[in-house]
Image (cartoon, rainbow, N blue to C red):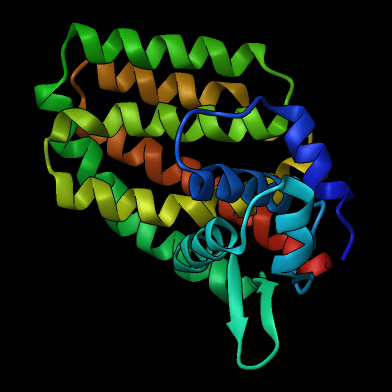
Amino acid sequence: MDMEPLRAARAAAPAAFGSAGAEVGRLLRDAILAGRWPAGAQIKQQPIAEELGVSHIPVREALKTLESEGFVVLAARRGYFVAPVSVEDAREIWHLRRTLEPMAIAASVPRAGGAHFARAEALLRDLARTDNHLAWMRLNWAFHAALYEAAEQPRLLDFIQSLWANVIRYCAMLAVKETPYVRSGEHAGILAAYRAGEAAAAERLVVRHMDDVERRLLRVLRKG
């Protein structure tokens, strides 16, 4: 098993505070998101434990978490592999997003105030400044989450967040293929409607934004 992707992920970001399992999971996730381990690559526990200087326990914990997030799959008697990506999977994820995220922003707009606006604006500025596509993906999720948090519907937001683990993976693929990844006016337009209290317009723009990304993503997936 090639350990260079893990070394690159480790070098790209300093260790974060938290459990050993969480740190191993972060490094494995980053390696997958960066495309260093492609779909179908086998993930072996022993080389990872040796490379990171940890026992098998945090590696196993990390892989179980990544499995629950959809990043890896467990094959009986064969071990873990990077989960496949497909047109069908992407279409299902985006279908669920189109159902849930307009609901979230519609509920959020009437409740949003100055602190919500300031956070979303700061994240939009950060998005414009970064040229690291993994950092961009995380900021992209943070921006969308900031637009939805005023909804105060924790079950809905938890479900959206669970979808975004794989949204980030698919969007990372798109970011590698297309530059710039998102047309800069899309986020700004959504934020303008959000600030103006125009819930229907914000819903419409969120759906248009998702549709645009899905079209480009499916084109990339079909090309292989």
